[in-house]
Length: 459
Image (cartoon, rainbow, N blue to C red; front, side, top):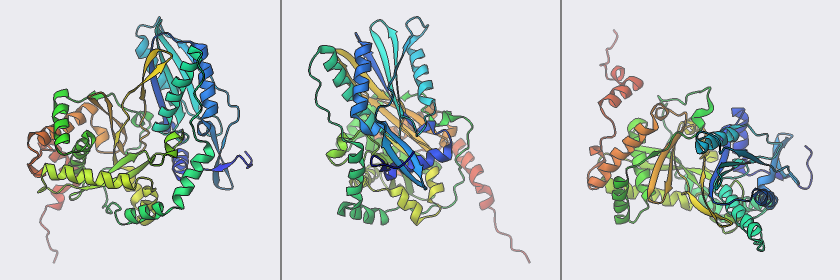
């Protein structure tokens, strides 16, 4: 593909995905999906027309990518083919399960950077029930971006279905996406963020006994089954969170940090990867593009610290990280610390996906949820909420946690949370993160028995 006036540079976040995709080969772990259950009457022709209309409006979604002289560029396809593949599953033994399985297979099919990076499919499971899959590559949309596209699609379809005027478009263009990043990189805010992160980079860790496994299967990069947390425990967690004026997610993150410290940390410092939206400006909130990023969350879990103080510490660091969330911290880590790439590859991320949200498709009620968090490498603890409920799923090949079942990890986190809500004044040292079998396993992996042998001097 040749450069022309429509060719634009990629953002730093897009370049990171391009390079990671190039190394991985297939890159199917970078494919995101929005799965929408629509209950009620649905006009398939009107839906397909609305999808084509929204794809025309969402220019960043139509981006294709190419390389010229070692530089990566993007260009919006003018009139890409847009298909709504239809599957009638009403005669299947379990239509809903079949729809989910087929949607997963569609989402895992590789995409080419030189072709449109989106797919749409519709599954009819009953006369009055459909499931819509909107799938795209993470390089063109992040989770917020695909949710924006879904909301706009429902709005356009509803107007077409009812014969009402279509609401005016709200999306920013591909050039707006590039300009938004360029203005930030030339701003005083960027310099302030750079100064903050330069002074608050994660400490350089020593060699890690746990390695990221090289798996032949791509399954490790896809979410596990979701395990719900105990509803009574969640109510107590909410009471604790309100008493400290923090979000429930802060208490959950604190529990995750304590779990990671028990298995991975050397000393009291714990480093988590913390996905952020980076959508802090009004313009960025209407960009159907790839804006999101990841920042390191560094917390100190000293044994003498109380649970309450630890939660305060986690909240303080979350707020600081959010204040400076737009900066490309991982690039700075790689620049300052040559070993950072290996450490980041095995880091645990804690990701809170947007709650399942409702949409109106011409009077038919719909519920939409993200199907993938985009965690690649390392290991991800992915929390999703619907109302007061909270479920955990996991993804990634990072050790040691990829060797645990999701049910086991959920139980471990809930044991920590029980200790949190029972007496927040207790010290962290009193919270039983590891049992005897865990300690024996850590001794074996860390060769602790060898390290504890007395030194014999040679004559």
